[in-house]
Length: 287
Image 1 (cartoon, one colour):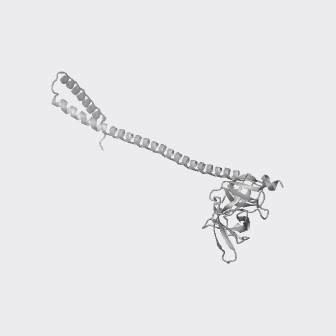
Image 2: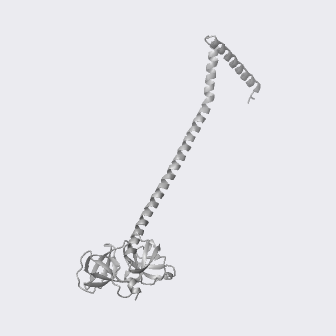
Image 3: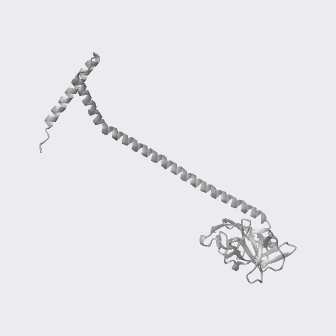
């Protein structure tokens, strides 16, 4: 393999440089004298121009690629900012919906409190409601330290929702009236007018009709749709006249020996956050 002769390369480079310089000088003179460039000058100019294009091509390519990468980075940063803004807007919308729901429930709790002015009550928050037992139980943040006891009625969203079944020092467990185990927590109620009342017990819940089932009714009184049902206060475990709901219909039970009256709950059970534990009526407390 032949070795590269550096001396020859240097000589060739010098010749090219001298030729270029001479060409430039000649071109300048011709330009000043308004004469047409010589043939050699034209050839050298074309050669130098071609070489300039060849040498500049990689740099132009690199410059274009750098510009493209810069545009991509700028686009990525803009997309990231937009994505962050969209996420922030989504979070704000969800928070706003949550605040609206909470505000609605607070208003309902305030309205309920205003209807319970004749009762001694304890306001409480729901702290636990297991999705696996959503319609059965919940836990509130008040207990024996706040004067709560077993069997106290719990109200929320405008009506009776359950009763206390377990009291701890600072929390209590509430059995909901929508539970399949409602038979363990029968609540005595009054149907019909105060002048001609009938009495019964909430003994079940029909999920298809979203209605409490009242049985063991004490009379043959006829009831109309829309008649209110309230707690009777009988049995000593609950105050009287707490709203349960409105009658929507009735039928004979499977044995044909008893009436079953269906009552639409006054309360909404889907979202319960704030509740009142009703101790007793103020008239009872003064006795």
